[in-house]
Length: 241
Image (tube, rainbow, N blue to C red; front, side):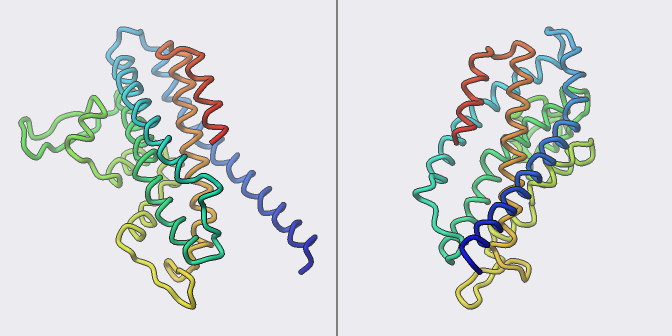
């Protein structure tokens, strides 16, 4: 294959990934908008508004700190090529780290986004009474160590399906438990090359997580929870990451 043909294939692949990212973002927006409208319609002193405000400010601080760490790991100068086993290994654990950090933070705020819409998230307390309570803050989710899978099922059950889809919990578990193998110096997951699995998974994860975070930041700005300048700085920061 000539160099020109290779460049053309790369351009086509990039175009397809761009189109896929746009579709993911459009779907997430369509799923979140109805819930946003409900919170925007609530009075600023209402329980619903207060729950979202507290959860968003908590989320913002966590997301910022985790995002900075991730940025230091995904600098182009420091990423091994995916054509090598080291590159595949690096990408696998970058995916896992992204899910567990900024991904989990976004899932937590979306759970509270639903709670602020009057949808109860039941928590079974292990060491306190009452044994069953309704989550009203991100701290409630953290203190009882609610599994990611449980939170993703809650999102799916209530119509936030695209974020739940891009957070591939099976892939996350496969990586965490080293459920992959090496053959002829390449890594394979579920009988597919790691590079093949990760190409779409990483694309979808970063596209969805960054869009959902931006959507929530923009929503907080429109509701007066944070200043507009703060949001603009974040948007610029994310675009440059």
